[in-house]
Image 1 (cartoon, rainbow, N blue to C red):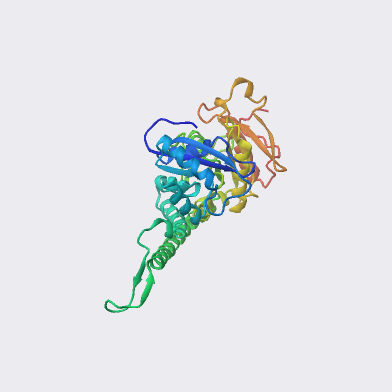
Image 2: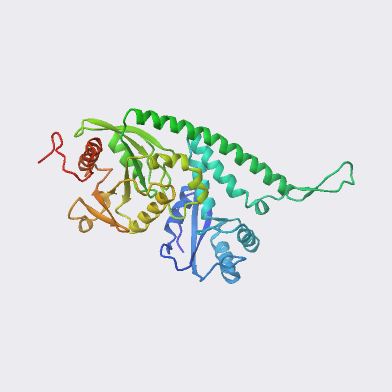
Length: 388
């Protein structure tokens, strides 16, 4: 058990190890998600199972242990690191006598708190509506059957839950229609950029890898950047002037990816992630100081596959070089790295200190000139002012 300081709802974190390679035994990421949402983890519990229990996900014995631990540490809520079915969530709440939420709802809540643009708010609202539509029975206490007909002796009417489900269905439809309009506007903006023959670069990567800090360092912008998960939700696009190439490119900062990203959010953020889909080049930003970076990279590649951006050329940017100990620093700041059989160029940088950024700009200039001359990105190009 570990505790954390600070204000917020005291929560108990629970993780179940089903033998999957990405299991977070320390529940570190779930704890960061909880803190980002304004909660305070006061205790953590992990256990192993071969398969989820159909009723309680963890079994009655472990549920009793969770209830005792929650009472001992004054937890007001229980958070699971995995997704729970509506029935499991309802049964756990009855057994524990505490509110129970899962990783999916936690991510949705964070997105709801941090979405700033009209588009971002619409996308979050759609994902939340889709999530809540499966949990009406658990969440709402007024779901008794209404009485139909005229007078006091009407026949059986429509269930309140059916009314609520229809209302949510109507809200989903309206939100989708509004998102279609926003997506159409984005398409118009992209066509305008295409007519200007703009080379589009998108920053992608695991949440908290330092994308926004790198974005600010490259384009001298003031996009919000913080040591938080999902500090940036809305795509920001600026012009980046590359002196070696003598022209500008369009650079976009996109939402960060995360393990087990709710499918509803992948769908809902399709318009935002469209910036990555339509990019000419992806800068895959990696937190080089995080020991789990290979798993984080795999999750990013998985989402890129899901949104149809896996075939776009990539450059790996291993960020936070300043956070590495002297013995951890790589012998070369530019090399190649294999990701599932695909070899990508890799650069080590520190967006905070600026180390390696000149080399990154030089590499981007090479890519831009190669695209202009219809050459392969690896072709030798003599840049103005470049060292021989």
